[in-house]
Image (cartoon, rainbow, N blue to C red; front, side):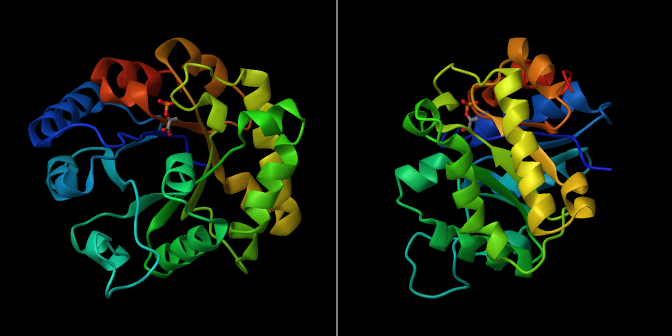
Length: 250
Ligand code: PEP
């Protein structure tokens, strides 16, 4: 059976004390929750604190990024082994902000995916189309291409270590959520592509989560779709009440 997941993508928000307060509040409000896997993702300097704070809770800690190489002359980068050494087991790769603002290509993203999987880090891999592609009915081919140039190059995958986050770029931070039907249609398409590339048993166990302006008011209808296994939540994950309402919608 595939996992239900609600993960917060905090982006570059929250200083040390804000980060601590938010995590403690999320733990307090969700300590009884057993219906899904919950993740928070503070910025690099606060990950170790977060791991310690969450260690006796049901909340997991997710890194927002990782280097594509093991070590060396890469000023400003953070490696898989560094993350592992402080107890991080999961990483977001390929967020549209990394692709567009930092120019991360599918080539680099594939290297990141490979190095994470080699180091036993669970990968949250983000894919999504821009608005022009959707308007021109090219959204399915964009998504297929993103998969063909990255995870579909891998010989095998393990759904225990990989989560796909479908995040239409036009919905991220814009307040424009994909409709439940649009999300379901794309998630079903993605799952079908995983069946064709790998197998039915892999695709049926793969969690595919939706991201893009999910709010407490829209979460339930999106999460109710049969191929939507949860959400990657940006803005609304910075508020413990909103994030908890979204968690409770699953
Ligand atoms: C995101 O950044 O992954 C995201 C989904 O953001 P938001 O929920 O703010 O659209």
